[in-house]
Image (cartoon, rainbow, N blue to C red; front, side, top):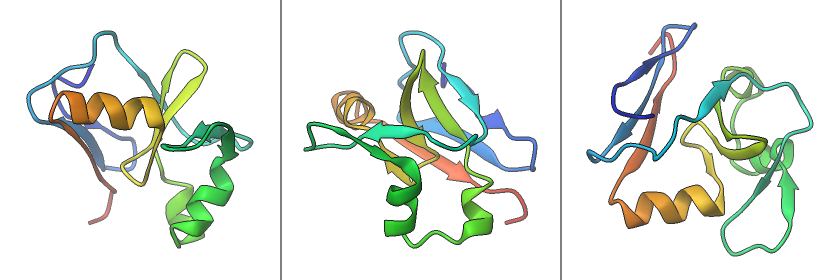
Amino acid sequence: DGRAPLPLPDGGQLRLLGGAAFERPVQVRARQGGERILLPGRSHSHALKDCLQREHLAPWRRAQLPLLFDGGQLLAAADVVLSAPLQAWLQDHDAQLQWRPGGW
C-alpha cells in the first residue's frame, strides 16, 4: 500500500514518497510482455514496450522494472512510465513514486 519501502528481489527498492498511501494494496510484479498502459493525455492504451523504447531505457534495465497493477490495470513501470490514473493520484496526494534499481 506504499506505507513502507518495498524491497525488490534484485536488491532494489520501490517506494512511495510524500506520506500518502494507496487506498488499497497494489500488486507489484515483473514484466511478462504484452502489457499496455493508458498514458496521460491519451484516450487509448499504448504498448509498454514502445513507451520504454521512447524513454531510451537500456534493454537489460527494462527487464528489471517492477510493474504496479491495480487489478488488471497497469499503473506504472517503476517510476519510468506512469499511467494517467496514477499520475493524477500522485498529483492529488502530493506524492511521488521512486524506484532504486538493484546494484546501484
